[in-house]
Amino acid sequence: MSDNGYLLEMNDITVEFPGVKALDKVKFNAKRGEVHVLLGENGAGKSTIMKVLAGVNTNYTGTIIWKGEEIVAKSIAEQRERGVSIIFQEMNLLKNLTVAENIYLGRQPMKGRNIDWNKMNQDARALLDSIHSNIDEKALVSTLTVGQMQMVEISKALSFNCDILIMDEPTSALTEKEVDALFDIIAGLKAKGVAIVYISHRLAEIMAIGDRITIFRDGKYISTDYVKDLTMDEMVAKMVGRDLTDYYPKVDVKPGEKMLEVNHISEGSVLKDVSFYARGGEITGFYGLMGAGRTELMRAVYGADRYDSGEVIVKGKKMNIRTPEQGKKAGIALLTEDRKNQGLILGFDLTWNVSLTNLDRFMGPFGLDLAKEQKICKELADSMRTKTPSMKQLARNLSGGNQQKVVIAKWLNSNADIIIFDEPTRGIDVGAKAEIYGIMNDLKKEGKAVIMVSSELAECMGVSDRIYVMHEGVMSGLIEGEDMKGLTEEIVVGYATGARESNIKA
Ligand SMILES: Nc1ncnc2c1ncn2[C@@H]1O[C@H](COP(=O)(O)OP(=O)(O)OP(=O)(O)O)[C@@H](O)[C@H]1O
Ligand SMILES: [Mg+2]
Image 1: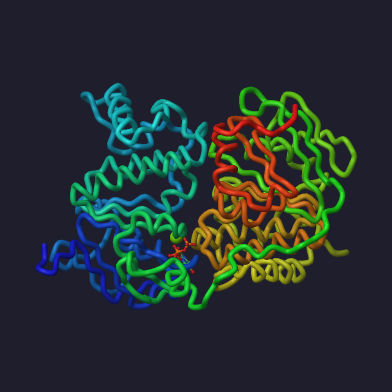
Image 2: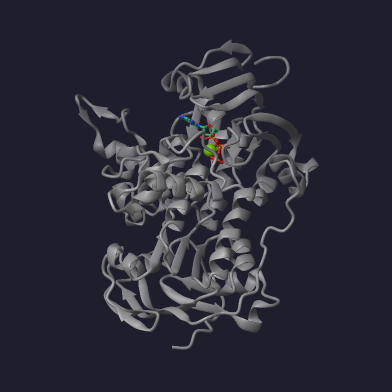
């Protein structure tokens, strides 16, 4: 190791993609036994620099000093061999393989010329146990929740012995319990002298576990500080280059009619006799821990998942919605939480992604009106401040948060009256979050029924007009009217964990 105590020093790193300077002479360093946070808005270049270090982006210029010696990061295999392990922001698991197969892909333990399945499963089990995860090592990845997939990615990264572990938004889909488990793992790694790079948009998390923090803005280096020397507001100001104080702007709208009524929906053990309604001119929030059944409920209402019994009433009319096409026709839009698998076609350009679900909007007398399509899609993407060189860019090439913005733009193109946002701000920076809340408020002003599923308590409480809370497939609490005033986190979490008795009448 070099004299200055750094395990890693990256200097003057520049990366260009066609039409984008993703990084412009930035620097970053890391020390053993330290959590170094990397913060910046969507598209600031965080994932890009870490992909340089991991040997994925090899088109960089600049210098990397690793354990005191200058190196060139040429390939993933070589960087892994040197001790660099990365948990990518976008999940890379193969859905049709098991958890254990995914963890040991390409390096399965062998017995003679065959894969030693027993050993592989046992090793995977031990690894999962070590992070207190009860995920079945033999389960197909396709059966897991997004949060569980993230835990598998984490175990996989841990299975490589490493000097530096890069976590690119590891907690974006984790439950609070899983986050706690992850923080324990991080503490253990720190004690062993591993350097951790931690990328997250969750400021409270950064305050809790970060030692130092480096901030990028628009591909440029801004600063490196000790976390304890900065307030959250200072972090935000450095990150967005302006003060941002009102995170949750509320607009007052008189609630309208019931747009959506859902009565007694049940589905296996996932949903147990769940009822709720959403009115126009209102944001109806759904809080719950991961696995509470909120996503399943919304998918059932939209027709994406089946349900055993119950009824869905749209604008007073009982509907039989059993497919997403029927849901869409009934005037419902569902913005899914899993943008990579359900929201976007990564190999298509942005115009296509925005227009695809609603091509009929762009039909002219002579077929598809391409000029109109391009114009409207661009306006929608711009309204979300999507950072991209052009609408011709492939969705795959956008930063994680900007992909999320495109998913939202796509649904804004739908003219639905009932719009369900499932974790709309996951992985999105504070500036863009404020824009999304602004859009939800606009929809509310237009008299639409906005439904927001959120695992972020502050957001759910800050944005919603009424809040339903779910716990293990049951509606466990409803907060509305006067109760919204003076609402505390304890009350909401109490309902979500089952610690507080439900106030829902049977
Ligand atoms: N393979 C690629 N081809 C073209 N452009 C790319 C590619 N990868 C990244 N970019 C662009 O580089 C810029 C930086 O992206 P990056 O993914 O590093 O952002 P980020 O800071 O990780 O953002 P987020 O918080 O949204 O994940 C963005 O404008 C992005 O669109
Ligand atoms: Mg990123």
